[in-house]
Image 1: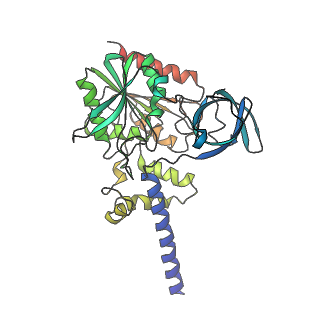
Image 2 (image 1 turned 90 degrees about the vertical axis):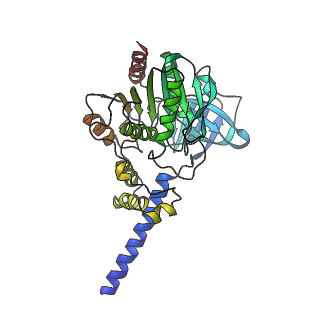
Image 3 (image 1 turned 30 degrees about the horizontal axis):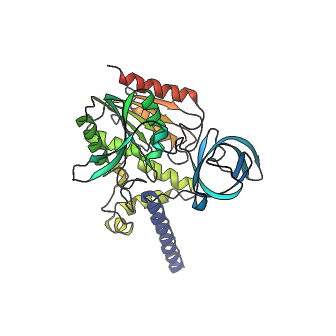
Length: 367
C-alpha cells in the first residue's frame, strides 16, 4: 500500500513538473505565435471564427498570409451566426471573394507612415550594439518613448504614437532584444535585463535635446519601465502604462488559471526559472527569480503616471493594476476602458479614454 502511494506521489510530481516546465516555456518564449484564422470574403463583408477578439467593437486589421498577403481593415459586426462573426470590410487593396487565411490584429495602423512623417534611426546601446527605432519628429523638447510588449512589434505602439503626434511631441518607438521585431532571442528575461535598452533609448532622447521624456509602455514594456524606475527614478519625467505587467508572479498565476491549470503550476514555473538546471532547460541566459519582478508596492511610481487598462484583460490581471494604482495614489491616475481583450484598450470605441490620453500628453508639452 505504501509503495502504491509513493508511486502515485512520484507520478503526480512528474506530471506537475512537466506542467511547470510547459508553463515556464510559454511565459518566457519570445517568438511571436499569432493565431491563424480561416476567413471568407463575400461582397463587402468578411466572416471569421468567433472569439472575444474577433467580436470586439471597433475597427481592426486582418493581415492575410500566403499568396493573398495584404492588410484588410475590418469594421463593425454585422451578425454572428453558427460560430462565425460577419464584419464589414472598411478598406481593402482590391476586391476579394472566397477563402483565405489571416491574423487578427488590434493595431489601428498597418504601417508607420499612416501616422505621419517618420524615419528609422539607430539607437546606440551602452554595450556598443544598436537598436532600430522609428522617429516621428515633433517638439524637440518633449520626447515620448514608446515601448512594445513581448511577442509583438512596434506596430502596437502606433496608436499611442498617433496621440503623441497630435499633442505635438516627438515620438521614438523602440525595439529591444526578444521583442517581436527586435534582435531575435529564444526567450525573454521579462524586463529583468531588457530595461537597460530602454535606459539607453532615453539617453539617446536626452542627447538629442529632450528636456522632458514621457515613456508610454505597453504590456511587458511596463515591466521594463518599472524595473528602470526601481534602479533610477530620475530618468523619466512621466509615464503612460497600457495594460501593464506590474507583477510577473501574479500574471503567471493568472495565466495558469486562465489556461485551466492548477494554481500550483505557477509556483512550479517560478521555481524552474530561478533554478540553474531549469533556466538551462528553458534556454535562458541565466537564472530568473520572478519574485523580484513585482512592482506593485508603494513607491513603484515615483513620477506622475497615467494607467489605462480593462477588466476584460485575459492576460494581465486587473487586480495587479488596481493594486499598483492604490499603492501609489499620489502619482497614479487609473483609467478603466471599455471591457476588452489584452492590448485592445485604444482600439475598442471609448472616446473618453482617447480624450484623457490626449489631454495628458498635451499637458506635458506645456512649459
